[in-house]
Image 1 (spheres, rainbow, N blue to C red):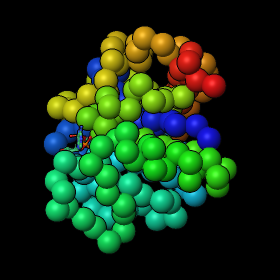
Image 2: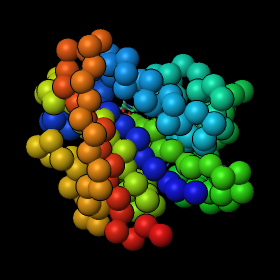
Image 3: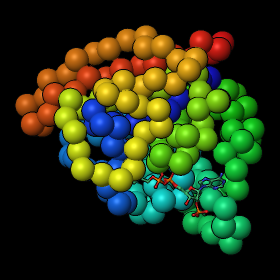
Image 4: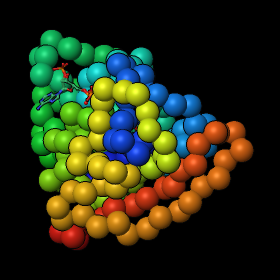
Length: 173
Ligand SMILES: NC(=O)c1ccc[n+]([C@@H]2O[C@H](COP(=O)([O-])OP(=O)(O)OC[C@H]3O[C@@H](n4cnc5c(N)ncnc54)[C@H](OP(=O)(O)O)[C@@H]3O)[C@@H](O)[C@H]2O)c1
């Protein structure tokens, strides 16, 4: 069982504009769907709201400070650490991984707990107001993480060049 953050990010660190993604890259959406299908996903309340519903075929958890917030299709936690404490043993028992799927606030909270960060790094700058933590000039530069793999991607359905990168935590088991 690994705890993995997964995101798509522009060269300037942008991951969102308002409640939306600033791009449409079908191949990346496919990569996200296939990576997280059947796994456990944890997200912030704003990301849940922007999706509008839980992701199908995955166990969904949402983090909110609002103790009266609830939805029928996801479990709700008041802290990321309590979600991880509850869900990591479940994921381990079911031989699954636990994916942190955003947004920026929840990625930032998750950094100390992550084994890996999977970034789709898009080779373009975007207008936006939500940023991936510690991502600068086309690279994730969090202390304790090193880039372990890069897969360049060309995709005829998208005008953008991008690459799938995996950053590994040094302290990961
Ligand atoms: N490019 C990508 O891969 C990607 C992926 C996901 C999302 N996004 C984008 O990211 C944006 C949303 O991200 P965001 O950072 O604004 O919001 P977010 O991380 O999705 O959610 C923030 C919410 O999480 C809850 N929260 C945050 N810290 C907490 C804490 N310490 N304890 C308990 N609850 C806490 C709060 O919910 P309450 O207000 O309910 O208390 C807070 O408003 C959108 O633009 C979305 O499109 C991009």
